[in-house]
Amino acid sequence: RFLYVLGQFICGEKRCDEKEHLRSWEVLFGYVEHGKKRDALVKLRLCPSCTKKLHFGHK
Image (cartoon, rainbow, N blue to C red; front, side, top):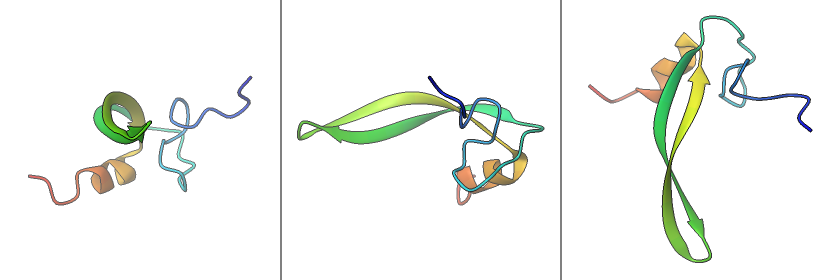
């Protein structure tokens, strides 16, 4: 049971507590499982400030 759901009603950035003006994004998440590299498309919600961090350096 989750009492605190990060990224659904609160910005998905670990150090951000913003609850308003969240936008949904789909991003490719890479990880290693049993020695194999895997990728998964994950959805997350970010506030405008953290969205800028996500797109930093991309044009």
